[in-house]
Figure 1: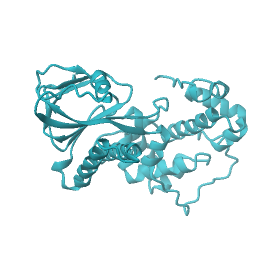
Figure 2: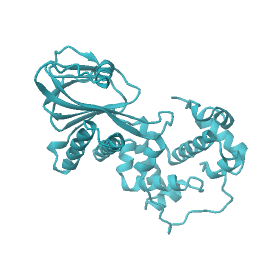
Figure 3: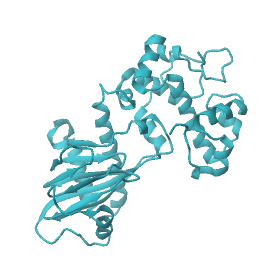
Figure 4: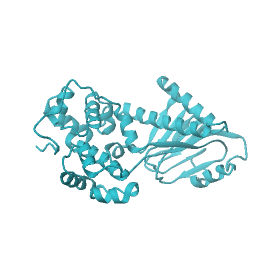
Length: 333
């Protein structure tokens, strides 16, 4: 079986005494360049309704006060949202949110534009709900398993789960900052929204123990440690046996477990992570091709270039020429 490590010179670089364990979720969030913010936190009066089409970014709504009905195309029936509920659509799935299931709807973009102009489209009567709405963006050009397995919808009832009390407090703080003009409020809103999104992903991760995918791998102690080893030391001569030994598993057991949960072999993941790093370095354009090749485990530009094109679909030179604006086209995407 190919070890996919051209830099190997017959010496094993694995050292069981080393402890390169890192926070894999944080590592991945840096890789996809997560950014989040809130659009608005406003009071709506009856009747009100918002139609959100498919979005290019993730979106979320938090019910601060009152209740609302959520309608999602692939759900059989509407979902009642109560105060304390947070609903998120990490892949920007279309949905409608309103006071009643049959209310007239206004396009989400139009609602946002009116609120930005200090005009609330649903403020003609007694307010019945306070809604916090926002978005989060990430680099979709990085076709890592986290993006492949991102859920279409997350529904967290933070006020119904004791251990999520602090999340409810976070949302209330975010709502307060969204409605004030204190110095630094804009930065506060951005940072707090990012914390909220990360917590939503954490919550999803903790509920994936029995569902194969990258989020389950992040919650699995053995697999997350193996991912840590790969992320921290991508240029090392990693073999399936070495990774398995590092997490106290036999080569076969580790390979089978990794494949079953992550959906690819350990060495395929290693190659993908290496090329993600290489792509970032190439786009920045500050280092030589040979230096980049060596940082991701290759001793020659030729072997690196061949592997890069096989995984990414274009040559390293094309990425370097276009810079950050270059669109990765992964094969099979």
